Amino acid sequence: MASLEWHWNMRYGALHLNTRHNIFFAGAALHLHHDNNAWGLLPDKEYIYQYYEKRFADRNEFPQIHLPEGGFKYKLIPLGDSMRTFPILRQNEHGQPPNKDQYTIYLYPFDDMPTFRTHLHPKFAIYELGRKVHALVAEDGAVATRAFRTYQDLERVYDVFASWSALQKNSARFEEWKNQGNTEGDGDVHSESSSKTGVDSWRNGVKRRRTEHADEQGSPTPAGRNSDVMQIEDLSCKSLSQETMIEHERFYGKEGWTQESLSGWIADASKHVTAHV
Image (cartoon, rainbow, N blue to C red):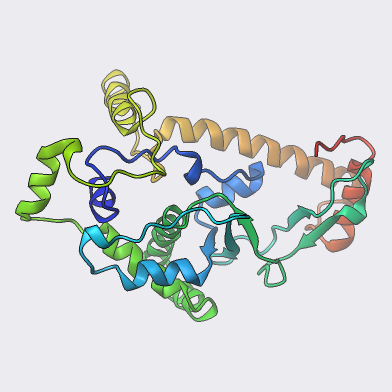
């Protein structure tokens, strides 16, 4: 946390990872795949290059990138082969009543899936994608190499992640910055920290949970959430995914998802689901 606050030219203790600029809503199954490092969001190269070119500059030169009209542009990319049997369903229109023509199905490796825009800030997306790539490099170097060759800007994302993760050991300026607390640094318009929801509240909460559940406590998650919370979310995602699979197998058998079976499932679901625009 302190390393990011330092490199992002923030005040010590000001980073709030649960800001809306670091939250991207997704379906339960897609969320579970994300937690398992199966995919990530690749920002537009315009923002990757801004951070890449300043990765060794003084912290005061950290780029200030503001939300453009329409949002930041991203592309979803798979990391490894775990999503090979997982299709992505995208609703293109929201007319009433819903029908199968309003949906498009994208299959691995999702090359034909268009880019999309969201409020998610690229510095959060770059760090999270870099973290996932770092895990992939350690787990399977060959798969990581293939990903670097497939997505040209991924290596730059990884380099930026590495520079932001570098610890400032034996740095008098770094220690002085920490001791000064909130008196140095520009803060961060994307942190939205406060006495109730800021990073200090999160840090104190983790300390309390570790004290109260010392025997049960696992390691904290990269997103700054307690592992117990993530286990609850994972169980919820798993149950929703299983219900969908059971329904699919009941109507179409135990074979994998196909373009035809998904189209049939969409058509059937559209008879029972009310879409909210």
